Length: 157
Image 1 (cartoon, rainbow, N blue to C red):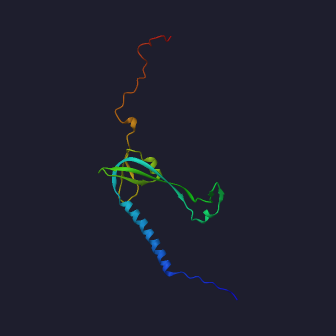
Image 2 (cartoon, rainbow, N blue to C red):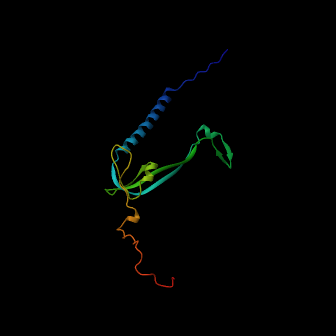
Image 3 (cartoon, one colour):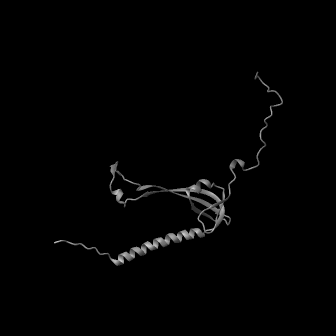
């Protein structure tokens, strides 16, 4: 005599799962479209790197590992530090807000740069670079390379 097992799935649970999954997809698409609609022109007044620690204890890989000092060394990339880059912009209208950017753009943009974000994209464009602090005002004439016209005075013989 052979035993057969059958598994049945609850159709209501499947429909609920699909509905929740579709809601998350719609939320992410909505946020992406909304970010593309933002338009601004202004000056970068600050830059920030936000760090957060990601710990994923629900992964099957995290169940094993070597116990070391009360902690667990997992196999794989189960946790780590996540960096989020953002700039603080003061618009021409005087409004200040934070805007997320990529790590590459974070390295390029400097405080004092004039930036704009056109409609239909998520990238910030640099309109004009900030003036470096050592070139802020009028510069002094360069030092003369001609030798002095009078010999040095003093006990230097």
